[in-house]
Length: 171
Image (tube, rainbow, N blue to C red; front, side):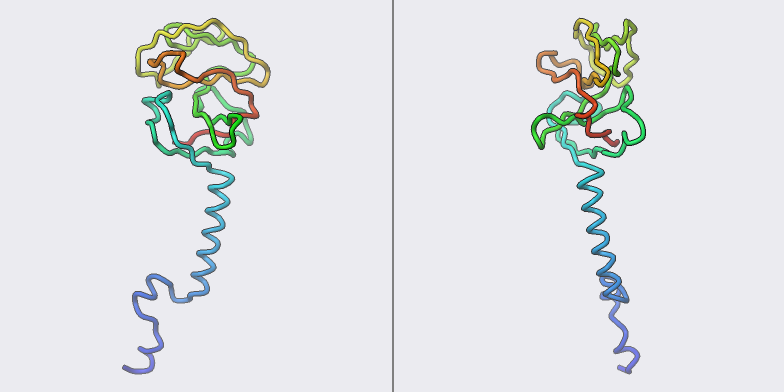
């Protein structure tokens, strides 16, 4: 073994640590800090519990909520959002069907906005929900799940103020 061969790091060390361990350590630290910031403050994980968003989102699936999605614009009709409840760790995942100032009703399971039936291509199951018209306030959104085949009494739906909408669900 000559001097040049002994001074070079082994192939496995080069693959796992790199040629310069200090630079590799700095990269790891930066990656850990960036991951912590992104997944703590920007993309929040949310687990789907319950069947209210079937078939769009399956039960026990994990998705991420983009907290920056509504930084430059307000939530839009059709967006799937996370809604913060009074508990610190519980959020509902629902679809926005009604916007501020609109009147929302349900007929045969379909949302009726200001007297016109909303086109909802994400609905897959037959439903017979009926609900009288409700007027939304200037800062309220009407949110409901996609699975309207379940009894309306078993379904959490209703008005959510803008401050309770955490962000838009990705994917």
